[in-house]
Length: 302
Image (cartoon, rainbow, N blue to C red; front, top):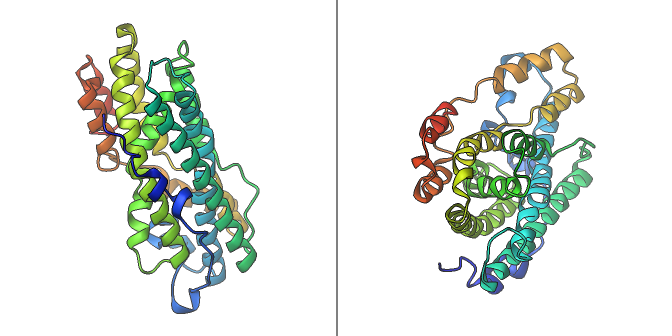
């Protein structure tokens, strides 16, 4: 298979990028995060919230995105990248593939670094502190889902978690760089991230085909029925930082609970977001397993 990293030394963000520096453009009407991606701001019970608190909510929502990135990249993706790179993934992979895994590892560490760096810059400039919350909720759900559905395959679970996460189309990475209402540094950093992730998507799609082809046939059915639950776990928004942020803005606990329930209770179909992931699984043969198509449909992924 062709490597998605044949130009990595020239174009990877960690090799050729610059440090993104915050400049406040709010006087020009720019926002820290697109309001359509902060859906609770439009809730009617928050209509009278002071503008200063709405601004702080938006900044903390950006922090949640950035800090969740640091957890996912280092605790999920790099866990698997290390296994592949050091030939501990249970597959006999050529050195070229292992070298590519180390490139992923470098990229993801850099993504985590500049995500925290930007959050820290914004906190220093705005006075809106990064709350000391646990930002790894998605990591915990992925791990719990894998342990619950594949309790006898602890070595396989992190590989599947990473394939799911790295092949999903993240709406944030697509939308923010093209949104001129957003502060420039946030757009630039998100664009940097998206460029690298396109290569990672190809790498892990290729890796999954090899993993599936070499998977013990007795495991194919349980794995096929676990994958949609892992996709759903990846797509579930961690609402605890949202609830806590609302409380910090002076919203009472009952109102915060109502807002969270109203906005995040029904996620609906995720077919568009996970189309590339499902296409990877289908092309490998996952959905040919008895009951797999129905399992993906039950999770509203088709």
